[in-house]
Length: 216
Length: 297
Image (cartoon, rainbow over all chains, first blue to last red):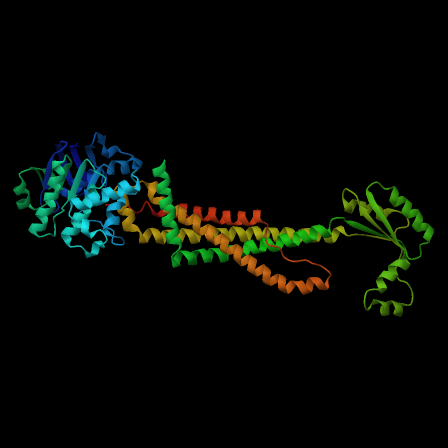
């Protein structure tokens, strides 16, 4: 589903974020990417939706070579991916419901079907009762769950989350990971970056450990 | 297809809501005021052109005989004039007739009485049927028994030249204020893009195409331009109504029913559409310039 081969990423200025990274995530797999801050976790995840392009090597997502994609093809790649960010990137000028509706605006769903999907996504993350609230009114954990609802509303094949549990207490963090596990159980491929080794250890899934840009 | 239409409808609705806010209304007003200048000038110029078109329909040449000419000389010249194929109608005005006409002008009769004799010569007024009026006037001036020739074409030419200057001025005004419209739209869209930075970034991250992101801005530019055009027409209509109210007594004193006319529906529509196209152009330039700067990182 996602496969890296000999991927390197150098930022302008010569900083090497990733070196010779090769791995492959099978469809339906759930894997964690761990490592210290600055080990290259975020860079690795950003290569998958083509937010960053590899300096060398190839990133294959769903059979597409992401590094070689034309600018115009990138939106269609991203529609098949669910992205969850550390800073959620929610829009605070609209309600919880409208945040979840955002990805449905440019999908081909009829309005009724879009509304049904938005409510289903909110239901799965336990926010169905908060539709009319503004994201500002939500707790940190709820905001992160809202970000997940937005990421899954288009039913992507792959979910990618960058530090989704950072800044959360252990209980809220576990709840977030449980939600990802639940999506994985219905067939979604999931890749989660986190520096929380204790959390990772509890789930007994595959772990990719990055250290100074290399996979251990 | 229905999804595509729905997206356009949503983008249109979003643009309309943005325009309905204070900032949008204010920009449309600014555009309207700017456009009312060339639109108003156009209306004035067109009204004057309609007036001068009536006046210069038949360019006339006045042929004056010497003061001492006999009536027989006049008749001989009249025959020659009527024989000339370049000449349409020929009207003879005897010096007595001319004097009678002149005396009707207020204040002149005393002057004539002071002179003590008729200072006016016999004259022919001929209308040129075709061809260059200056050449005809020159030829008539060379005929024996003709003292002086005066072609009305001269003032008609001057009027035409003035109208030409007016037209060039109008063109310049329209070009300048059209550019201002594009600039105003460019800037409003730039500000909108800046305030919607987060929304644009998130949209790009969740797979919105460039076309989807641009669409509401294009619609906004178009709608703002159209609204500005309508405002401009409103200003022109109000200004013309005011001008005409003041003009009526003046026109009546000349025995004229002249008034400044609002542009005909076709022209008015063209002004509004032109403003819309310029607004769309401003949006296009602004979106091209500013949207690429927002990339998720």
